[in-house]
Length: 193
Image (cartoon, rainbow, N blue to C red; front, side, top):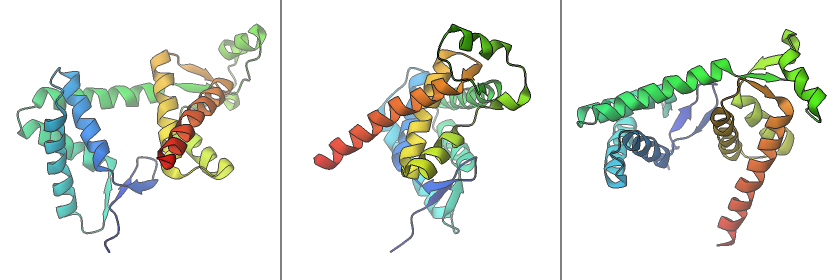
């Protein structure tokens, strides 16, 4: 039995390669240029997955390599606009991550909310890092790595959509609890089927 291909994430963590993530990424890129078609996304993802498995001898691939291969496949199949959109989206997300800071304030009332903007001490602020959510869920709560990454991604998406750059730690905790409840409930329902 072959060992599954591992994806090395930007933070150094490793997880199993998921073909469905590639399908989703390609379909989202096509959708961004009003060309969403799940059949085309599946066919292009098949090409990406085939290429990755054929050239990998070490049984691991980085997210950057996957990203580059997806862009190359999109470009070589007359979907240059989708490849450009994928790149722009990728860099926009990186920029958002760099601009967001977490403030160690537990907001209970308006006076606490005022502390968020006034707090200038560097020890009370830290750069946004969804990996910290993953680590906490795995080490403190025994959540699987893949489930923790799903929850952290959901929280990150909500933070991005809010458009704020100073995020209270208490807000992150509430979002994590809410999204964890949704994911864990969905997992229980899938197991019951």
